[in-house]
Length: 172
Image 1 (cartoon, helix red, strand yellow):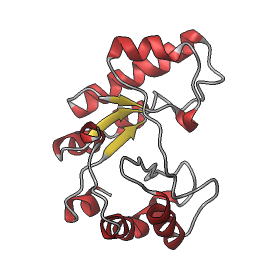
Image 2 (tube, one colour; image 1 turned 180 degrees about the vertical axis):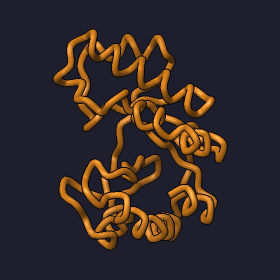
Image 3 (cartoon, helix red, strand yellow; image 1 turned 45 degrees about the horizontal axis):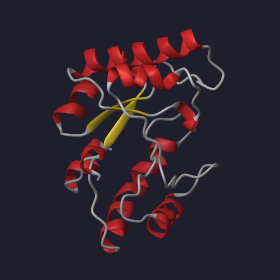
């Protein structure tokens, strides 16, 4: 995905799972070095909806620390797994200074979607300020491969619709 984004001059945001960042620090460093925003997606992608306050704090803190150590830069944003939160989450995010960021367009959908469907959904649903939720890891089998085939078309479709592609830090 990084090579595709670089070829098209696009910087985005990568919400990393802490344990995966710790296992692949060179990739985390590359994401940061290439100017993409880093986001914390918890330590292990556990549902916060089902987590106690102590487990929520651990998931957020350990994810944040692992990403910062692996990438050499602290994550600027946070996204909860599946978009599910609990009330214990927000005080931790305030202390870390990382806003919680959701999405407005999910091209893959609830089920695995063909790359052509992802391209079409992105173009039809995106508006100025839209945040696309793209998955490059295989939490859903094959998601990374499908996104790799869809991403150039998604970029072209959004640009063709007159939309700019910017990292989260540049959204106003």
